[in-house]
Image (cartoon, rainbow over all chains, first blue to last red; front, side, top):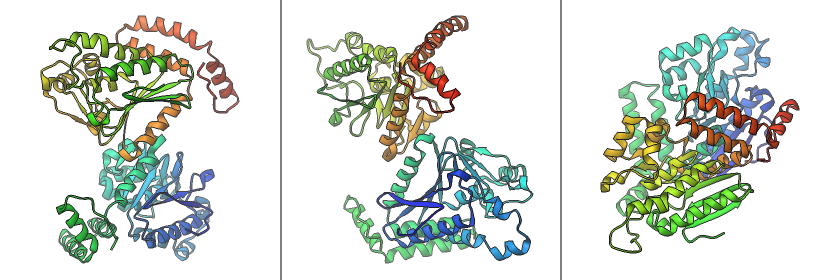
Length: 260
Length: 261
């Protein structure tokens, strides 16, 4: 990736996996407007790169991201917030087709928690803490927190988190269904990369269409979702990878994916 | 140092012992138990070694006694002799080693192989690995310390169930039961094991040794006995170079550089 970034860093930890690191440790990776602009650029570049089959988004051990950059918002009015339209960038991340894994250690608060929930899976370190503390500064979650958290952990716990601003631990988050697995902080990134490697080793078109179908479950009726799923399923029969995958299964060998 | 059935390596304060009979899932034959005891003795005596990693090559950690390994003399395997001469000294050497032993359960750990894993101080397990009791499957009792480790680690009821029904434990079950410290994706396993080992190799080795002794003593002692022992051992820890370094680093608000002495 030849883009120049100041708030994030991108690198390829292993073939097929694109990593994005939030890189403003001095402010616990607060999500400034510039950070969000760069994030979208990085996501778009990876999404357009056929060699990247899974994206891992992470911060550092102390913080995934501690929230929005409050200093940028403290003087804003209704009009400036409307004009700024900052959530358009979050919408763009929602529509990324490549599977995304968030590797979360330390704080994932407010916008940080919401960003982690934009990922398709979350690998957490045992030091991770999730929360939506917006209520403490007189507002509420604005980047999907009330919707995605409720879908992930249910109404009761989501209400408690949103209305009290209290944080939940990695273990609680796992028990509630917000995160996929919890591993010691020393190697949570390796765990995330290994999981990403698993995803990257699958047929890429199938992975993208499957991601899209799973996400559909949260935005449609069962009937509509089933129809959507069926269309995506049939669509895969137009790919070389479907032929290769099924032939390899019958011939008892490993498939070689072409990504088309 | 080289061994027929093990890979043995010392670097950065870590002594890595890799059981290396992958074709038989690292089954323990005479040679392997002999080699392992010698390797442990070497790691014990070598002052460069500040922690020990015990793991397996290939798909398994250790499948236990090699049932195809014919006894040297006579027709019948003398099981008492095999334990007293081969396995028990290994388990004692591991528990008495005054340095942390990290077991990397890279794959299945069965029978005496599981006992070896449980004799270590910390266990990192691959999510693809399983723990198998195995002994009861051939109508033997769990040995090599298993009857000491099982009830203390899982409680009596679970221990009895595990030792009699022979149902394997998945990595997730083992983690939930507190038998292992962490479960890691197979692809992340080596890196994870190394990170833990480096952490221990850079720690206050002598004090780790004291902690190890005390915690084992704590399993079989009264509170009063432990209070007395703690006072005595704290006095010993207090004269270590690492204690001086730890306090100095705390006051100077920096990370301590422990030498292990």
